[in-house]
Length: 444
Ligand SMILES: [Mn+2]
Image (cartoon, rainbow, N blue to C red):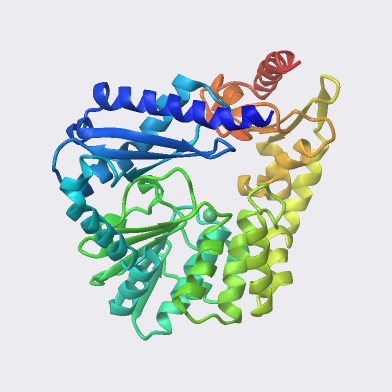
């Protein structure tokens, strides 16, 4: 075994070197890379990383060659994965080989590369750039996505208060208004619904989205001429904004909490409550899989700083209007189980809503009552309106409900999807059960 442990990294290194050399000569469109000669590859014993040493065949700008290599790394990585078929492809890093015979020519350039690396380390981070931009701007516009949720509004209000405390003019705009269940948040009454005329912000900060279709109408006109900063945690995003701060964390509120700490922005009980609400909203009260240890640490700090935890949770997940609970009773009474309790179906009609004075918005979350039943693979909520049916689908974890929704011309995510169908309630339910059954039969 020992013998083998020694031999494998060397064998992998050899394969990586061969494959890279082949790629560099043949497949790369960047002319810089044709000048690269791989002199050696070493692979760590766990086969997780590979150091690739190279020299260059011509005296050229070493910095731009190194940049070309770094740029192409993920492509190399993919091609090597295809070629050598290991469980893990080693992560590649490129290092200029100063001992190669070509190196003596360009030792001067190596020093230059080193100096550049050092100066890069001293460069401003995105967070520092944001801190400076906020400190310098006299007028700031804050914006979030349409149909704002707890993370959007909590983040908006926290940043509004922090910037207002510096004495700058700050306008937080939310054309859809603040939803009723979030109006308890401190500062909610300071958010305006209309983009103000004659306000030309120097800086615009967009929170909790990096998707331009999610921005409110009028955003372009309002932010024209200002620097745009995007602060977001979604992993599907567009390239927009002059400065982007993005992290794959539970909520924009979590990202902001660390940002506040880094930039030494003031934190008080109101800001702590806003950001706690943001994180609690996006994690479903710390129950969803996006809740990580770091999320809970941030939440603990927020509570230590005086966040009103009980009030936040009550408003986000309780305190329903009576009509909502009455409608819930009616909808739950429609529950029908199919296929050995693997499919749960709820339905609602205009008449049911009218009889208790409820609105479609009160149906929010009802489908989870069906999904949360033991053994349920797919939950269905069908809501009949005048001449169409809104079909909602939730997965118990194994079924891709977006694929089912697609059969009805709808879409969504693997776990939550929907469609609007022009048909009667009965036939939409029947067809939805039929499609679900087909998917279930292929499951095992
Ligand atoms: Mn969010």
